[in-house]
Image (cartoon, rainbow, N blue to C red; front, side, top):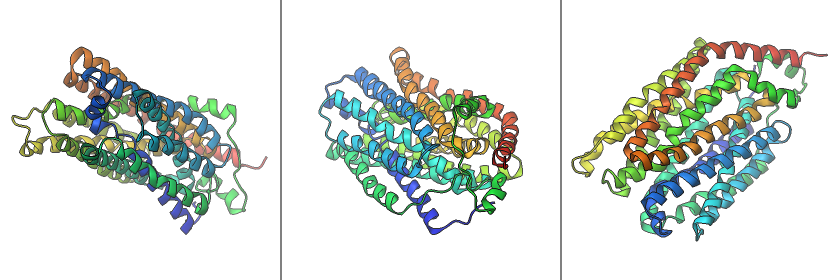
Length: 439
């Protein structure tokens, strides 16, 4: 059962995707110019890795994750449309101002505040997505949103990597922030918020009678989120699974430029290729996951587990590759390893988000995605901070190898989810039917 999509529904989803693209373009704007920024502030190589790579990343992701908890809860009791516009503005204003930062203190706090945009937007986007698409289309829909996010990361990396060396590291922050101010105005004026639960089969009789599922989250509902096995496994796998992503997109560009001897532009192309592979992998993963789910629910987490663990091999090859001469001809193998790594590991993302949509009721989806986002942010924030310590102890190469192995741990928790997901999904539908039944 699904209410027929209207042109305004399609506009809303497209706007969500495009706004997510520009929001996520900000995520890795520091990485291509890490050394240039360090030189600008008078940092040595150790300060570069610890302060710019570790401390700022920690503040960016942890503050965003913590704020997203309140945004997620508010999204389950108030207008998601209004909240989304507010969060976009709160995130993009400090991104714009980062282009004018004159001290490390200013840079640190502006980056931390920018994290609120990404942290707050994610639970809102996926809460809305759950009410635009039914269960059998959510993995694919999640893949399209994930595609937009990945394109954004790639766009930001490209803009910073190619404009930064010529025009300075500040300009990219200004360029990627501006579009969302215009898009937020369009979203505010034209988008109509979907009715909660309008895509749920368990609410068919309610919607058919023209009634509205207007239940709001309660404190008891919030606590129940932690009793669902699949939710708990999703939180833990997210912490381990995002550590490598957080580390690589901060250090890998500079690692290939400094340790491997490539130019900043060539190193940026390698990282961009990983981003391109992740874009393709995320989209393919959602479509494959959708087909596997429609055959049998347990196939979805099994697919995620295999993909996460398989991605370790090409990533280790990428990190440990050492060119004889770092020229353009030496880029072939890093590009192959990078593509296989980005493609394989990215297969998981959209499917985990679809799993969460399918085991949680409509009035709790904003909250569950804020909790999931906090888990993601813990991995992305604590990962670089932890690995920066390993860099001091073991050096960059060994530290990046250690970070890669976190995907093996992530895969084990996803494998565990094969047992819990089908049961939790059935319980959710039964609970939803009970909540919607006339008292």
